[in-house]
Image 1: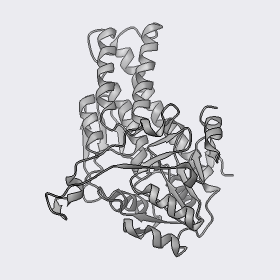
Image 2 (image 1 turned 90 degrees about the vertical axis):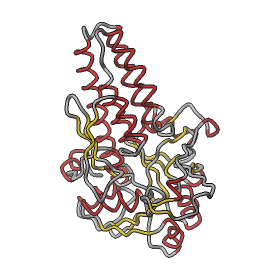
Image 3 (image 1 turned 60 degrees about the vertical axis):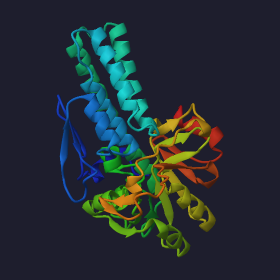
Image 4 (image 1 turned 120 degrees about the vertical axis):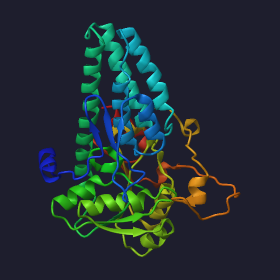
Length: 359
C-alpha cells in the first residue's frame, strides 16, 4: 500500500478553489467555470451563506470548509458574550444555506463548540484572541480534510488497476472539497500521479452540469484522460463494459449505509448492481449522519427554472411544472463499499459503519 507521505509527494494540486486571507475568504466562483475564472471576496457570514446557497462553492467538504471560515468572519463584537452571540446567529444563517449537506452543520457546530469551550475555560481573554483561535480551527478543518482525502485515495487505489476506467457522478474532485484533490476522484488522481493508466467517464449532470463544467475541467487540468457522456448514457456505458467501477462522492451517509449524493447517483448504483460492477461511495467521516433515519432527511429542491433553462436558454415551455431535487438516496443493498479515511466499510453497514466512523 502507498504511504501517506508517498501520496503527499506524488500529488500536487493545480486547483485551489478556497483561499483564506486573514480578514476575508476568497472563493473560486464555480458557477462560472469553466468559461470564466472569477474570485469572490467574502468578509461576513451572510456573504458566505449566499455563496453556498448560490453554488459559487459546492460539494459537501468544500461547503464545510467554507462554513468554518464563515464562522471566523462572524467573530465580532465588543466583548466575548457579543462574539459568541454573533457566532450563534451566523451558524443559523449558514446551516440554512444547504440543508442536505451534513458537513455544513458539522463544521459550524465544531466551530461554535470550540468557541464556547474556550470562553468557558478562560482560554481566550478577548474577541481578538477568540478570532485567532477560530482561524486556527478553520485551518485545521482544511488540513484534516486534505489528509482525509489522501487516505481515501490510498484506500481507493486498492480498487483500481492500471487500464481501468471509472464512472463518477457530478463533481467529487478538488473543486467539491476545496483542497484540489477530492473524494471520489482522489483514487483516480493518485493513480494518475503514480503513473497508472486510468481514465474517467463523467456524466454531464443536469441541470447544473457539474460533470461537464467542473469534473471534465478539473481532470483535464490534472492531465487525466476523461470522456464526457450524457446522463442518459450511463446504462449503455456500463452494459458495454466500458467502465470497471463506479466511484461517487456523498453529501450525507446514514449509519445504515444509505448514501445521499447528487441526483442520478441512485440510477448508477442500480445499473452497476445489475451489471456486476462495483459501486463505491467515498466520503470523510464528517459526512456520516449517525443520528437520523431516511424519513428524517430533507432532500433539497431548487428553482424550477434551472430545469426549464440551460444557462439562460429556454429548453422547455415556461409554464411546465418541474420537480427539481438536488440529491437522491441510494439504498445500502446497491453499495459495494464506502471508502473513508479510516478504511473501507463493507456490508452489513448497520454493524460496520460505527466500527469505522466512531473509532
